[in-house]
Length: 333
Ligand code: F6R
Image (cartoon, rainbow, N blue to C red; front, side, top):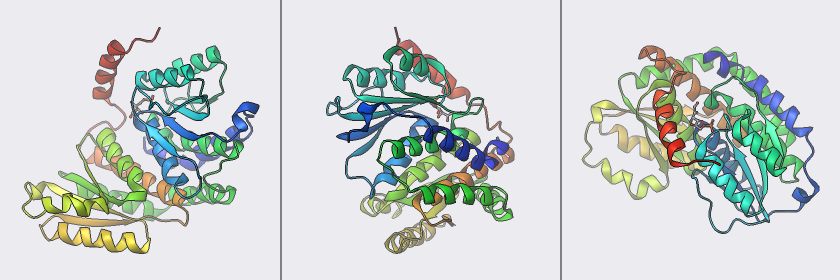
């Protein structure tokens, strides 16, 4: 698992170079009324990341759906990007079939599976991602495929320069001692604790990415809070909190003035209850850099923690159990 994370720069580079050379159908080149991502878990987070990246770059709505249904506004003018690493996730397939029924411009991304067969049946573009990984470790493969596809469609959410420097930075971070230290420190912090991850609104997907990593790799429950919303509800919970001895808090500092002020206020309130708080400074210049840096540290920390807890980071038995249920509930003909 460690090896997967430490070669993320290669994954990102390969995925971007592959997807940028794929041509898109002519009809997909007209500006859509919105972009919708469909996907669950480790594949679904890709859509969340793009929503964060598109926030101040695109002037059409971009949303990420983690459901087997799609909202009624989606129509033939909507670009739908359906992502499932395995290609077999039932919720993703059902929601994608809905979009195909509505004649949306659908692009599918997977390492194979039913999604790939569907793309052949419906004659819509499909992009392969690197096989043989676990979905959560394939984040760069899926994300950089999407970034290249959006660029091809004339809707870049990050510039070429940002892509290139993010890949270079990833390479640097993957081999740096600081990365190792930062991630082992976080694993130590969360040993025998319930982690609380706090971020600002723009970095909500990163906070959830870390939560999911600690859930799936380290097998522990995690709480996520986001400022400024935190100051309108969760803050009150710290007036008379319970189980503070079991909690430890990680603050994701994006280095933007107002966010830093609010996050340090949150840290102060929480640490006054006796809960230890640590700040992770997100390295890099661009939002993409910071998302990738945070994801790398989170991934490595969750694997270190798995080791400390003597659990297998790769296995996710409960997800397989859940998938058996969902396969029974959603039959694909
Ligand atoms: C497992 C993982 C899960 C899966 C999710 C959806 O590594 O990360 O969260 O991503 O169960 O499966 P896929 O990604 O195959 O659509």
